[in-house]
Length: 291
Ligand code: GUN
View (cartoon, protein in one colour):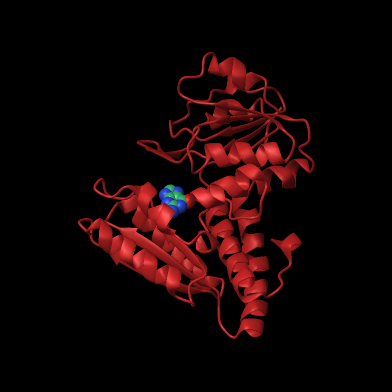
């Protein structure tokens, strides 16, 4: 058996098109474009690439992009003051502070300062709590993108066994809540989990988000399982995921490649969340089914 490759790049490109159409409708109704502010502190090269890609995609979708590039030694109170200004700026519908932040700034303090109704990353305690309790809110972009790929492939996820490897606030925890919302039986595994290969072998759905190159081996995968690889690891051999793709290909039913799987979905969902924020803030209706 050879697993189907889930083409996240193509899926994201179609989502971009649907977003752009609704951005145009929003602009016609509201008299302005949706606005996304992206804040980058310091000069981490990977973050700089992500922020540049977000800016390009935002503009390509017909949205306004407000980029704030700040020095690594920026005092914490200056960053908080910028967040306060963006919270109050009526042209800004979404605020994203790129993580990681320099060591002298506690990311939790900064994300908590963002207005939950502009928190298109879904990182504020308010939005994490909304997701956990089933209220409307913003869901973190990467796990929501993973869920879209899963539902596109599987339709109804009810009753499936899902294993999420990784318990971060950005991916693992929100992913577990999303899968629970879809009535999966969810296991969250992490670095202290005993017998991880056996835990993974039970899963119809595997979401790997640990940040360790090719840690999940092909013989850990249940035959026919759907594997979503969130890892982006830079190695001498190039970019690889958290899953041994070559090994998994012979066992899984379908798998997202790295690159070209989950990665492109993150930015597409960020734009989706920004459009939804703009529509909610202006009272403009939007086509939820198309997003
Ligand atoms: N760093 C890596 N991924 C993300 C993300 O989705 N949002 C933010 N703000 N920072 C990140």
